[in-house]
Length: 240
View 1 (tube, helix red, strand yellow):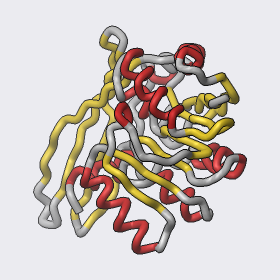
View 2 (cartoon, one colour; view 1 turned 90 degrees about the vertical axis):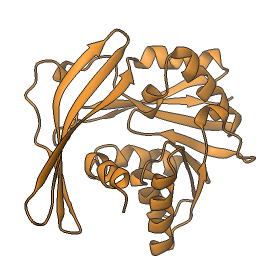
View 3 (cartoon, helix red, strand yellow; view 1 turned 180 degrees about the vertical axis):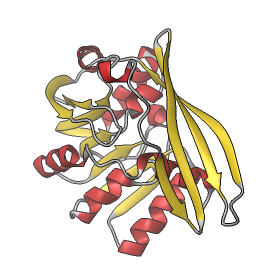
View 4 (cartoon, one colour; view 1 turned 90 degrees about the horizontal axis):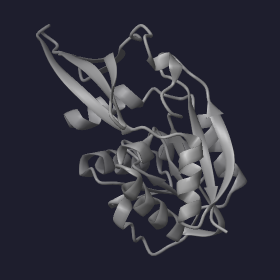
């Protein structure tokens, strides 16, 4: 298993606060379902275990290989495709397109989001929905809160730990800084720093951006805080 896959699993794999919301959206729509920025499969594999047919896209070949192997091992109906969400062309329509874990905030500014929203809408059936999880503005619990406990996982005798140590704003972006530690079976430890960048966005703005590309606002599903993760909101946009 590659280190990129391991760290993705460590930092995202245990998160479950949003799964109930994705289940509700999936059960209320029609298959197949498309996940943008699937990572190592936390959401798409979960929904496939419930009987849904999933298409999972990402730019990272190692992430997709992990999803494929895990789906194959469990005989799950998950199809993968290496694709840029801004140039998406899968040649099929979906009842639901999902973007979990603030993916829509990772892709760039308003112009970049508009391109992705257009491509997502083009892959929806009439009445189909796009559901995107975001941090709604700058959550109060990010400001001045003590650092949460690290995310920890053991893989093949090596212990991986990722601790969020700082959150800063840099103009229109939010920067999350992590300290990564890897402990080998013999006890030797290596450390590195890792940063993730999110473009600041609130639900009203995302709905307006959806309307600008021809979609209409739908529900907003709150996702509660959980085990050191801040709360978020899933913004639902519908293709007429």
